[in-house]
Image (cartoon, rainbow, N blue to C red; front, side, top):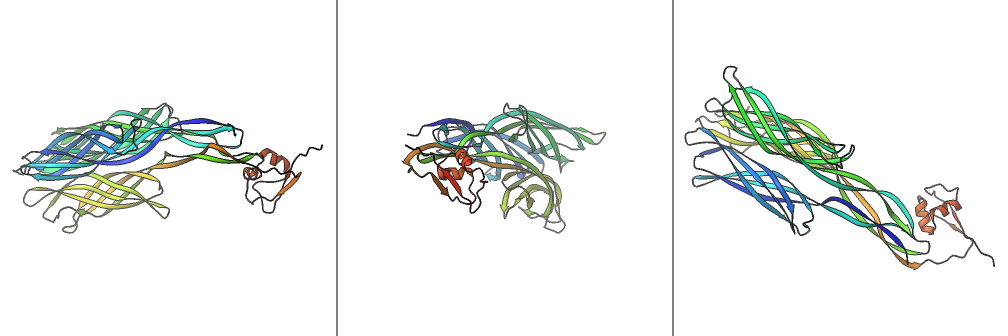
Length: 492
């Protein structure tokens, strides 16, 4: 019977990733004649794992800019709380659920005197749990030990206030604002996870009695999240959402300027990945019998490098409704992007579409909102990664009647992902006894390329014994080399 000793690996990591969708709806009253611009933002307030499902909940904030029956431009906003669940039979209550929300689509419909706005929210849910397994640590076998890399995750979270104050030309009422977060760096320091990025603030406002204007502002932020596991050199990832935003504009008639104060509450969820080398057994054999080995294989996911690309894109925009030379282009607002990283033939590209709402004033004195989209494809060096895209400075011009030429600056952040695979011997079962060779000397012809371990395993001899009997052999084995095995003989 083979005597073996085992140890237990105890770690924590991402067990599963699932996606889910839920629809959230709110109603606006009969005062809304024509919807010009609609925006929805969603903030997560919590997520939890149950038996066979992950539940997540939060609040969706809807804002619309509209014309009333007298063609006056107005605004309205409402908040709706929601709860949703993603089903998966592998989910257990012991898991920790972390969700990331995105507004995938917003639709407007009229029913009778009411206007309904429906937002389709997508959730990417990561489930974390303990990663425990037994692995061989010692015993009667000849063991091949190697440091095997494993990864354990440490979750952390924090909140931070950010603000900005700046001047613009004289404005009237602020009608609508939207915030998009872009992360530019995630760095581990001793005891702290530092997350840096920018908030792209898009503001739509009245200018004059019935004229619209829009402007943007990039607001930098820095969040420091306490995390005991964070040390210099560790890789990490983070997600930041705007929990609350307040925009105030104070007009100064004398200077013809407007002082804008923006205040934000940011929530951050981070994950620090600690790489640990386990002194494990990757192979084993016995000098007396055949041995059947069982292995435990783990695939760990860790964060890779963060890189950034800035690209100016332009082209003909697709429109949701026609425009002509009788329309006055007044504002471009609600800039956003949908993008994916595509890998092909060893090269990576970020492909997607930049979108915005174009507000025009028709010859009849009525405003219209036209959705425009500009496809893009940007070459990047990273492949196994995800991408966040900030759309900045999007503009629109009508050079030819009915056609809109759009330009935008894309600030792309690539978040790399790294896979770490570990394979360790977890058990050994004894088989048939090896035949005994009673010759004093044996000559063995090994395979070219074999190392000391492969040779020792083939000969069923400890590596130090093989090396001592053949001090002139260099590894890896070359073609035509011979190995001599000496056996002690007892003379009666």
